[in-house]
Length: 346
Ligand SMILES: NC(=O)c1ccc[n+]([C@@H]2O[C@H](COP(=O)([O-])OP(=O)(O)OC[C@H]3O[C@@H](n4cnc5c(N)ncnc54)[C@H](OP(=O)(O)O)[C@@H]3O)[C@@H](O)[C@H]2O)c1
Image 1 (cartoon, rainbow, N blue to C red):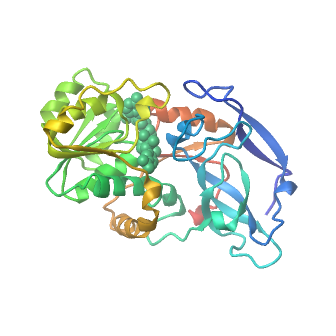
Image 2: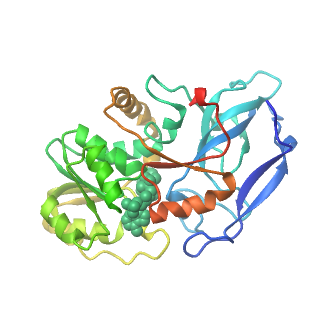
């Protein structure tokens, strides 16, 4: 294995006010030798792919949240999969060549304590990359948000926004597998076509179409479960179309991550319809990930759960790719390839 003399990392230079731009991050180099494992529990990981998540925008704000903000000068936080390339001379839990998952950040080499790594051994029908998608936190978010928070039942009318994205596309498929009528919302006719033709939703609606509100009322009628990835106007619209006892699983609010939320006007229907709106974080279900991954892996193997990756290239372009999530460049799960994992490992 040949190594470069330096590792590259992308660090936070200043906090953005809206979208990240050229001054938000800067690239730094460090000698790779400074990342050699010096303790028995340390390993050096070559980062192969990083996950791109809308939440990363929130990690740049210096506000109270579920996780500490990334500090100025720190490597941008990011989950990923990588390959162990160096271990300490004494016994290590990992060996060179092992494929691992962890929060490596926007860097091509990460010195990690083994306690912060999970070994990846994909089950039949799955690949290492699935641990950033259909077997990773993306799919786990859809699974627990829909089934635990949303309490989805067979026969429910379920609306999913951000439906052609990573979480949304899995949520749509799980809802169909569990017997719901699924109306998907996405930002282009092409995405809607994919949702209907490939993922089998009952109807997909383009929220950028001038007839969207009418289309919504006509196709949804009233809803039992709303899996909300976007917040804002679409959440407000869904609030006006609740069945009695409806559940809104508040997963994310991407429409408001780069600006100040306007506030909701339709929320009084929560009272009249005895409905519930509940925010959740996937990490709170960590003790139950295994049960979900077993079912997700089975669906994958049987071809009942489809996955699509939007793969971008290049560590130094990560800030640009992050913005792409907010303009909807991706269909399916966006990842950035940092190094080239041997195809046989994927
Ligand atoms: N609660 C949790 O534990 C948890 C965990 C993971 C993710 N999340 C949240 O889940 C949501 C989806 O995340 P993801 O990773 O699956 O991202 P994603 O859906 O793959 O990518 C974001 C998508 O959002 C859509 N979008 C962007 N701006 C929008 C706007 N103003 N209005 C409506 N749609 C917009 C775009 O698609 P269009 O072309 O359709 O606009 C874009 O492709 C995010 O809000 C994220 O923060 C929550």
